[in-house]
Length: 259
Ligand SMILES: NC(=O)c1ccc[n+]([C@@H]2O[C@H](COP(=O)([O-])OP(=O)(O)OC[C@H]3O[C@@H](n4cnc5c(N)ncnc54)[C@H](O)[C@@H]3O)[C@@H](O)[C@H]2O)c1
Image (cartoon, rainbow, N blue to C red):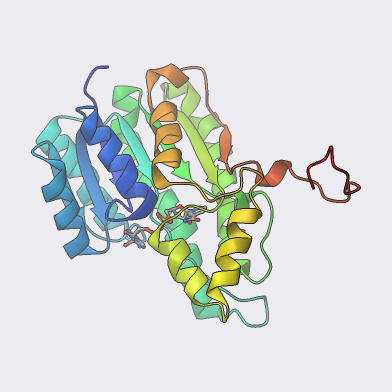
């Protein structure tokens, strides 16, 4: 595979970190972006020489522009973007303050728009690819996570809209929709529950495959969508969810059903 330059957001931890590890192992040049500057520097150091770090928030167009400029100045261009930066907050419509709504939308939806806005001129030049990490919560809703659910639904619209606008420039835009993934975000969310052990079991059991994903299992799908192997895919958001959204309840409990 030819070495390419990839910008990865949310790269200090979790899914973004796994995307960075996979692409570094495959010999690509990377610009890593994250708001957690210390963890970002540590990740970049560990991943080798062809890895640059640009600390900043995806909610700032200036920070996104700086990360893209780093790719262009240091590596001569940009071929792909994997956008993973995101935050999880909880509340229904009454509990969700305007400040919390704005915080979640700023990072999880506007952040994706700003990363794409900053990167698209360079991606048009390279006829590159962009992959947004959404969630199955962009297709269905967990109760009590309204701002997150709304932002993730918005990401699917960004994927479709940008795929249509960028096709004539040769840029492909796709998304991934993970189920539960074993990352700091999931572990922190589970720790909020009064009975974390029971919730841990429930999270695994709700996936027909019987477990949560490892971050590498999402990273490999993102790498595929960024690569030429996915050259005829655009406007698609691929579920990487262990079957969660394929399940419908209500079947009789028989030996054959395994229930
Ligand atoms: N973990 C899951 O179960 C799960 C499931 C579905 C979707 N997702 C999505 O996958 C993406 C990655 O999640 P994760 O589980 O790896 O989360 P994580 O919290 O483990 O890692 C997210 C990274 O994003 C960074 N980040 C947060 N806000 C940022 C900002 N404003 N600018 C730049 N970087 C920022 C964090 O510092 C962190 O390094 C998120 O968009 C999340 O919504 C996660």
